[in-house]
Length: 135
Image 1 (spheres, rainbow, N blue to C red):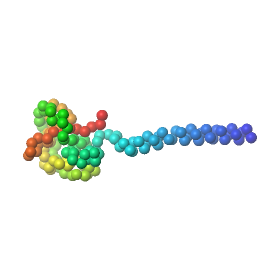
Image 2 (cartoon, one colour):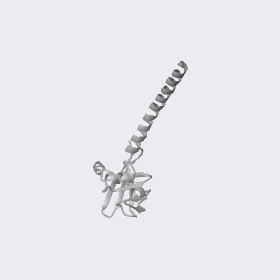
Image 3 (tube, rainbow, N blue to C red):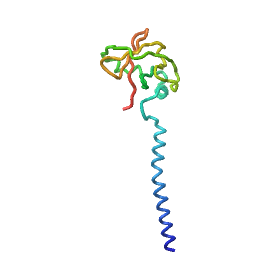
Image 4 (cartoon, rainbow, N blue to C red):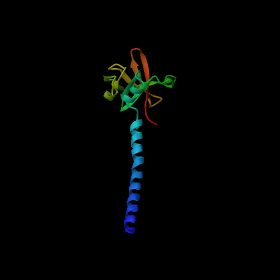
């Protein structure tokens, strides 16, 4: 009889430990799937937050126009680094060279002063784009 009670207590203890050990993992997985903010922002995420955003993708990173403080910087256009090769308003279709507002053939230049800003040369004038990275 004592042996059966002891086995029952041991089994209940293990069940309790196993059950408690799995729940936090489940909660973390649920939180990660809800926030979905691991890594740099994607075109799909940026366009979901602001459907009027002016973006393009270069080296697997999204660049965004309209960042006010970027417009206030004194920057010098340097060498051309890429050119817009695709246009799409669908975030999941973005790949390097894709823009949603810049025309195909728009030349993109780096600037001498910073590595996180690029300049698009358009018929209406230069547009500054800021690199969207996490952290």
